[in-house]
Amino acid sequence: MARPISDRIQAVRRTLIARIQNNAHQPGDRFLSNRAIADQFAISYQTADRIVRELVNDGLLIRRSAAGTFIPGEASPLIGAILLFDKRAKRKASFGARLLLNLSDALDRLRVDWRVRWIDPEASLANLRLPSDRLPVLWNLPALLTPILDQKRRALLLNDRAPSGVGATLVDSVEVDDFSGGACAAQVLSDRATTIALNRAPSTLEEEGMVGGGLHRAGMIEDPINLAHMVSSAGLKTLNFQSNLARHHTPPSRGGEILPPPVRGRAGVGGGLVNAGMIEDPINLAQTVSSAGLQTLHFHSDLARHHTPPSRGEEEDKRFAIVTGPRDDPRSRLRVEGFLSRSNAVLIESGGWYYEHAQPIAQRAIDAGRDGIFCCNDRLAHALIDHCKKVNHIPPPIVGFDNAPIAEEMGLTTIAIPWAELTAATAALIHARLRDHRSTASHRVFAPQPILRWSRPT
Image 1 (spheres, rainbow, N blue to C red):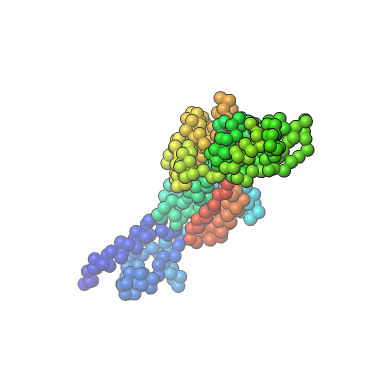
Image 2: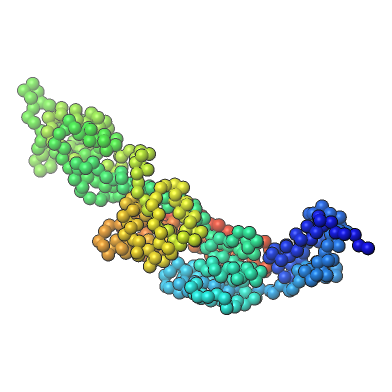
């Protein structure tokens, strides 16, 4: 009469059955040896052997003489890759088109056989049949991953993160660090807003124009006694100026001639003595002007180069907006979270990744992001810039994400995906997976980098 199986041994048996049935192993994979089972569960070798024999009798495992214990079935060799792309990648100069072009070139260099199949993400995937001898490579098709994993198949996600749990053991992935990219966008916009703020002169001065990256102003100070207060309120440490002293100088006093301000002189222009130089101490500027008997002072100054940084309070007053992608897309969510880790912003939901998704909310985003707007990809930014052209409005600073071809065409500042590195890593993973389909899944993450194109978008 056989001894009854203890509760502990039954628990070990249930654990091994779950491991066989929950996608932890593929058909043809080697299973744990008796010694490994005994060591892992702290049972005797004989008990481990008895449990494995029972699983073989139940058809859950097979034993091969002098080879070991295996998952039933034969592993199908992979002969190539099938690239499953959202049909939007057919659009010329689109993100997907560029990604496919770069990836196909990288695969060709490694002599990997590949085919492409266009998928409509809105269509039903229930009847989709994929060749069993090709590795599925998915771009922008998250719904397709579930049926692939249900078949216990390997796959690779391109520009997306692998699922958590058991699925992560079957799916390779290549992606960018979206959180870091969002934080980078916040820093870029904040720096740009600060630069613009520094370029703003006091409201009593007349704007002359944009020169050499700094906002230059020109004007006339009628009251030299208040000049120091104006300079100090602007945070100006030094003042570059030109003044025509001859036209505004009072006659010398009876007791002797009053000397002009201590500045380096130049030759007379138009009959008037023109002096130029730099006042190092703006607090004493009024005294210098008064001592020269100057009633008015014409000047030219580059405030952008000598302005003090804004205070913490001014930093917090910046008004930024974020145009988000799909609400349930982790890439959009992480980019938003990264931005908000660095700066406050108003969230404007577009509901999607494409130009048409941003059109209805464009004006709302412009109104909310007075000092700058972060769009979670370049196509959303494209819609905002086009909207500004339509309503004849100068756009605030806008930062995109991806560095899709449209970004370069528009002169858009963006957080760029490292295209060459990303596609080269994808091709290398595909190549390695075709040679060894049982190896542990790999997940590669690349840091995006800012590309500054602050010239006015075209």
